[in-house]
Length: 596
Image (cartoon, rainbow, N blue to C red):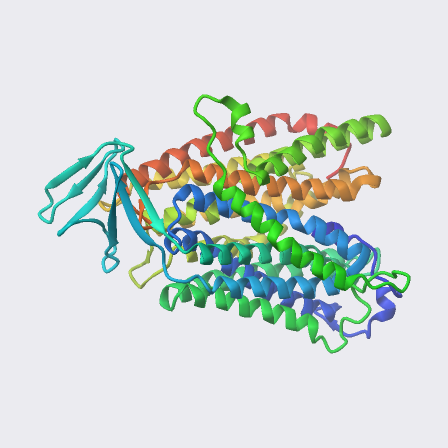
């Protein structure tokens, strides 16, 4: 959506050059500086919140891993889906500027609402049908959990065979609980759970208005054919990485040092800074991103009201996601699909219908060359789902791995928090993006630049290699079943390099391969593929679920083994899929008919 918007003509009014006062910022229209800063602060808020979300669900609300990663995946899926609607509303009614301001307000309110989480949920355990109080000793790094049985305080130890041992003070086994007879739970406020879901719903709706339309305004700064446009977007996207880099360090630190409310509050402050830069622009953005002519009718209040009323609808999707029943054992793929929550049915159904429908339409109305180009785009879109499914483990399973099985000490100088480990990706993107740009340019001059399908294949193989590197590092885990933080950093380094092989070329590829009449629809399909990937990423993270009591795992060895097995499997699968794509690349390249 962002780059397609960049190719759109300027907003209503005269040509961008006629509206400019001639002032420049690094050779670009000076308005770029304000939009750059606006995007930086918006991403500061969003990525700061995202760095906390999984840990907040697991440690404050004490949801189990399945619920935590499923809810996180559903949230990020909707974050990528709603911009399709927000972009359409801006194009037809509100204009980009008003959409950005409304989205910023909604997101800021969502972040502030997350600050009100109430008291931490109270853990308990049900053993053979009888309920017991559970206490968690957070004074030690191990955060040992205890079952309170009358006047006895029994330490909980999960075993590799699925049984649970309850240990007396001297370390002896006071009781063994058979597999499936120990159930962890938590008493949590239904009111504050509702408040949290409403907050996520507000952020989802607000993001739909903000995300696509800030880029549209950037595109309107440049006249058609202005060769500075690509460079301008490169500068603009640096704001994304700078904002996320800073917030993924500061928000998790505040959450640990002060409280969850402080981390979310800082994200909200960042979002308000973003809103203020647009709201109080001093006329610098007059004529950019304005609303289209509507024959004297202003529908903005109706749209704002409808958007607020959409919050309960999104809330309902989250509730349905959390309460969806598991598929019955042996029910097969059909039973699994029927058991999917409404959000899953919506995403999968739309994607599975859209891809073949667009191809059938292209075959009927397009030329042979156009159909083959659309076929190439569709194949790459499907592989794109696989890449982002695995890459987006960063916010869910990899964050939980950092929290449970990673020694977060940095050279013994200081200790990072689990949420802060997500900053590695932004750091490596900032450092490596210029180098990759130079590399691709140099290879292109020599006629050696890989084709787009090869880049996609390398990206898929790269994300798999990153997981295998972490698996390799697990063999060097210490006696406490924790790997050093540098193995996790190595994974993020490899994943960042893989991202730079696929992310910058994806949107551009869609605009070049699509039939002109449906380029907007294909762009929507591209973002739908990322939305599906986010949802599937939550499902993959659920496979890595570990038994927890009071938000803490009961056996770190079991935890490490579980993550290693899952990461080993998806690493091999990703490499295999990447190799398949590289093998198929000559055929796909032929279908692309010279598009680079």
